[in-house]
Length: 458
Image 1 (cartoon, rainbow, N blue to C red):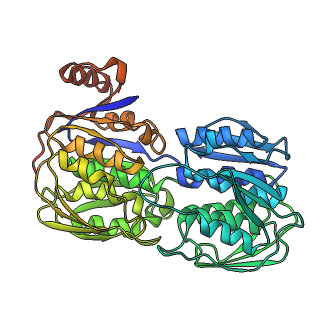
Image 2 (image 1 turned 90 degrees about the vertical axis):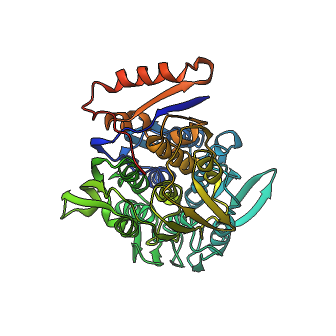
Image 3 (image 1 turned 180 degrees about the horizontal axis):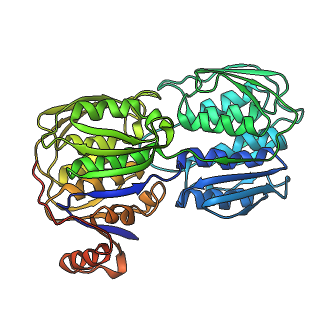
């Protein structure tokens, strides 16, 4: 099992490019199940989740050429309908094959999904939406069995839940409705940019989806969907993570392909804290801008509440908690999407953070410098927050279980090392002393233009 060994106190500087969005790519890939034509996706990131989705789609009869960059997909066997547990358990987003497969093949069997563990995330809204379209749903031996022998029929569906809209549920029901008879209205649809990207892809395949980006989607069913080529949007969560990396190291970083247009709530909090995101290129194309990220020497506290888009994203809550640990004063973070998503709190505390949790709210008492320590990742975004803390920490930090990171960030250590970080990926069976690691990672990063070591101040 791999871990990261991080030498803290390095000020980041340089330029990197934001990769394609993982959360957009997975349902885009699943859309290949809706057509007999060829679906070509560009800007597909190189991630373990993408590799697992590739394996799953091949299991479901899809021929796939490529696993990242440019990927071409075409259905070869429309009779394969069982998404089995051994693949589905690795990622929650595997549930997004259910709607496309049901719509096109009129039957589907999908194992209950896995993924990151941070509280209950039921899929009842997915099933309720598909049942409203006329599907019969059964649960057998841990599998969801959905059938619609006569096809799906358009209707009006309310997809709101106790914590707001459902992104994957919207993706599932919207994709299925494109091939239903008649018109479907989805009320309380997710408005996330990943849903917008999926709707744009489906329309380019011949679907008729209206009000894209709004909470009320109107889908007029069509007989079939055809071939298309589509470029995946940049990953807003990766963009936010690397912007925080610049801020916690008091760095000066240029990020290309920064989707600032869908990150206004994040930019708002950055402004409050004292982090500056300046557009230097791409003013006319804000989903693909180039920005420069700098920060004030003294960061200010703020209040953050996670919400469905366009509110502050839950997937950046952990990273901003790390940032606010360095701000002077008390900050309040309230998690309204996944109230149990605080696995990183105990690990940040091991590094010297002062965080007090009460239910879905944490009070962050900032201004205490991080100290390097061994920590363990509990989920994808918690992993990122610990790496960020390690960048700012005094001494060496070792982050274990970084397989979580590989699900959502393409070679994070290489990207950050280009900017001047000192991170080495270490395998469990080949651990070496910290001093050797620092020396090794320093030489590996020396080929890039990196700043001199700078001891960070709180």
